Amino acid sequence: MYTLGIDIGSASSKAVILEDGKNVCASLVIQSGTGTSGPDRLLAELFQQTAISQKEIARTVVTGYGRYSLESADGQISEISCQAKGIHFLLPTARTILDIGGQDVKAISIGKKGNVLNFFMNDKCAAGTGRFIDTMAKVMEIDVTEMGHYDSLSTEPVTVSSTCTVFAESEVISLLSQRKAKKDIIRGVHRSVVSRALGLLYRTNMEEDFVLTGGVAQNNGVLRALEEELKKPVFITENPQITAAIGAALFAWNQISSGKQ
Ligand code: ADP
Image 1 (cartoon, rainbow, N blue to C red):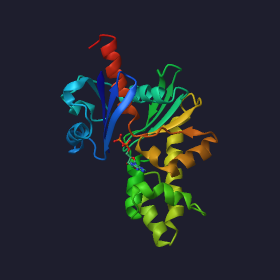
Image 2 (image 1 turned 90 degrees about the vertical axis):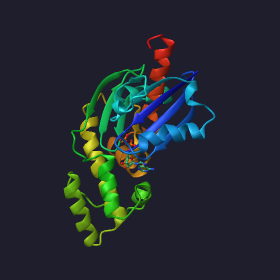
Image 3 (image 1 turned 180 degrees about the horizontal axis):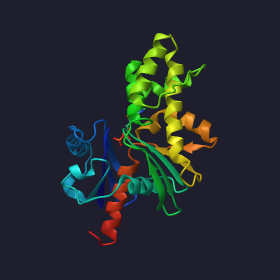
């Protein structure tokens, strides 16, 4: 039996098809989020790419910032619960999750069964989020997917002291005009993101294993800076952008198997 988990975020739309609550048999990420054509394209493209038809989906649960925009779903569950559920399924030893997405940063403590013990979120400001990194990447004319690579080449990291996205953008422009190397500014940008995240992370139980999720987990520079600060290993899953969608598909499966539909 198949269940579908959908995560409509601010920056991307993700879908996962799960078989019998055990195997991820299809997944798709579209790099456009709520309020764009992303959510509509998501399902059309997902079912085009797999042999499974939409009629075979027994239940659909949606999560993410834009979860109430998808009317065809059977239910909605918060990203915090779905993230915890998905990570516990993929990495049962995880106890602390740092999720950095397009406009949210969340630090979540989870128990041995994947239950949420506590969580802390950023305020509405873009500081420390994926959007902060995207803005700096744009100023430097570098694709965001290349930021981790540039970071790895840094030899004399520069401090980016403004946390506000607008001020940091001006600071980066000024650093570029001072002929500071992009790789060194990028290391500074990643350190700034991590220092914002630590403010949330230190409020959790800080129990190992640590795991970094969300689109920004694909940026090795952020992962490196986080491990340097924590002085502990930080794990990432194979596709860190779809973990909450996996959690949503698992909730859909649990609802079917417990008869609570
Ligand atoms: P949301 O769930 O809020 O829609 P995501 O978890 O998809 O957000 O994260 C989006 C952010 O992830 C982007 O702002 C970007 O900074 C980052 N990102 C996405 N893909 C990559 C990639 N391939 N490499 C590095 N960073 C990425």
